[in-house]
Length: 329
Image 1 (tube, rainbow, N blue to C red):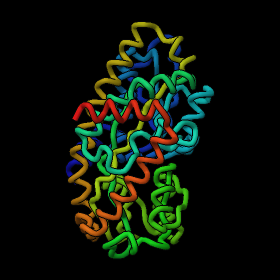
Image 2: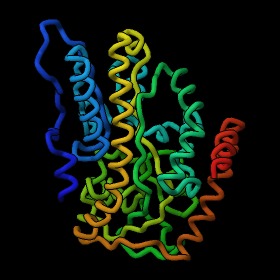
Image 3: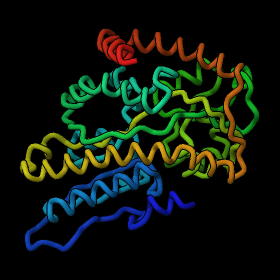
Image 4: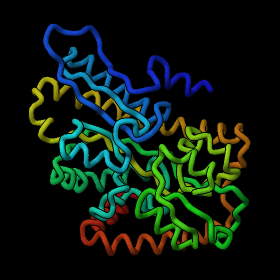
């Protein structure tokens, strides 16, 4: 499709070492693992960021991108950056809500269900997130939201009652709790394993963006996508603090500039990709439609419960984030 072609122009679809003319000195080589497929817009954006850094530092820092969990599985990427196994990488922080509830701020159902609202919520949470990451030997370079999350099934679902007993892919505390509160059966599955999980019946449903479903061609196993706009989780590109402290000020300036460009470019790609992937799901044979009033009513009740639970677990820091966000409305 045209948008995919445009996004992928000049970008390889496997792990790529992005170099220009090789300098006479030995380049500093960085590995950058990413959890999603090479064709996913987050990965494409990451590759462009890596090329920007390599070109901007005139080859002094050479970044090799490893998409699709090919170097390190998604769930292990954050830890690998913290410990210096790799220099930088991408991770969806809500997957680490068990470490600190604050990491799940962007996965509270229906709190911030649009791009505009998501940005305000991020601004409210940013100081605390950066503080927590610093305590874990990490520096945030940039982050990009996913498109709004919808529900995928292999049958018509018109109410929460219809969801009971369905095997549901979970990837963080919020998705597991959503499954429990709706009577579904949570199954932990990484993005790289989705297609196989649906094909073999290990999972029958998930909450995710149109982008994930489109990239994974889930129409080969699933039949229905409901636009519920539950939340917009974010992927974060982080660098190890020990590595970062050794980078020259000139190269830090290059990297932060490339990161700023990647954040803006990624946001626009996420917005553009939303309708594009809905159309792609339809072309694949899926039924794509808004959820029924009855289903939305049931989901919003679940969302209220989850919001209350999150605020209890996140304490004063969580309340501060939500209050600051609401003051921006």
